Length: 119
Image 1 (cartoon, helix red, strand yellow):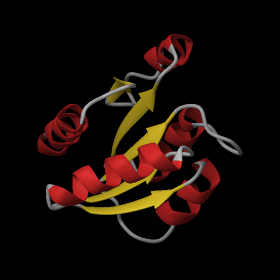
Image 2 (cartoon, one colour):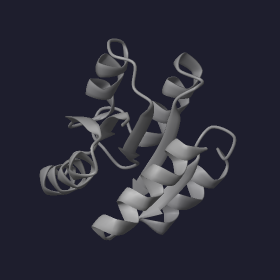
Image 3 (cartoon, helix red, strand yellow):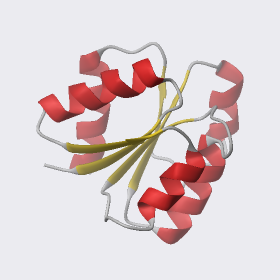
């Protein structure tokens, strides 16, 4: 299965997503913010980045812009609970493959990730 990086500052959401993806056989690394995600991306070769938009230090959109430049083959999915943040991401359709709205179910997040990995 895939190697996935989850960048999410809410520990409960991060653990929820990681467990769901690990249950589906994926190798998941979690980090609490965009700066930690950049450091993780410098090492291992991740196939997919799943990141919250609103995070401290470096938000998900800035992270996605940097990650897409440095890792053009990696799929990028954003998560948000804020409609205004979803609109910000709308202008980045060439770089970001999907925006997932919170709250989501285990099946919804896993399906979104697996659909992107199949593309």
